[in-house]
Length: 435
Image (tube, rainbow, N blue to C red):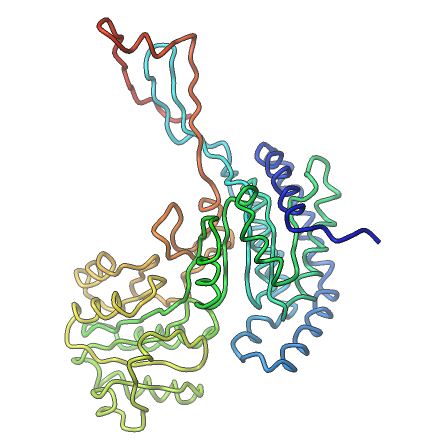
């Protein structure tokens, strides 16, 4: 039996693979991804068998309900993995796109062209469906990836990665080491020290988990630490829309990072909308906590404490706050939100536009559920994660967030000396159309 590779060896292999992936043709990349999608479909029963082992482990370890919900796979989810991969195939190749062209002088032209980041380290908890999402996005964008899933999903992840690597190894031209996986917590610590070979870390998980990653590496980190998402029902809201959107934002998948955790309601509509809304939440077994005004309208709601406004429940629990004006809602969200996703329900265009402009979050919505904030739903071909960073990538991060650029300067023998001194030539700096 071959010895297990060290993290240093794995990252070195990934680095070498990334240099070849960077100039792999889009035809080869798409052909490889189609082979992977077919392998996922064909391996459905094997993935489900592995997932059963993980679910048994999770239950024996008393892992929380929301994490088990993220861990659990079924045939529809697995077919969705393949569909997500094919959606990535359908996207334009993000590599080699000319973003800018400037004629600096006659015979001296500057181009800015997109290129891959290099090696991505993806660390995530509980969600085996993240494996094909992340792998396909990294591969299509010309990046090598090193995956590390949570121990609770180890059997599912191992099976999916095995299907992916076996599939792409059959495609001529694809470098070995394009997709790799590490398994232990100690290997994560080692990976965070691989700044020589790894160019970006993308963590997906709890607030504490992401903060640990950010505080223990010199590698740039792209991600969000929590998803404290808000809905605001304005006084000018359509009641039917408001109730439908609020229910979907909380109930469609409570464990998701874009599920609503706090609902704000304008005082002028609260008496009308709270009773039917609370009735629906109670039918769905949602635990409700609210401010004093909320409890005056609905007496059997528990009082909210300060911590509730800053908590990502990822469960059937919701905080409710009554506000007197739009500016109060905006200030509350900017103070207590995590910069993830927030929505307003209103028929007033000016109020909606103010909300969209002034809320400091990566995704802001009008008359739509917070659950729409997702790479696949946005048409990005799945997502590697959702970023609340104010860097090159924000919100659901698809292919564009895995691309940077390089400058290419094409000359005909020019030297800087020609453009300096008493008789210096002048630059033209003429913008040219992108090809």
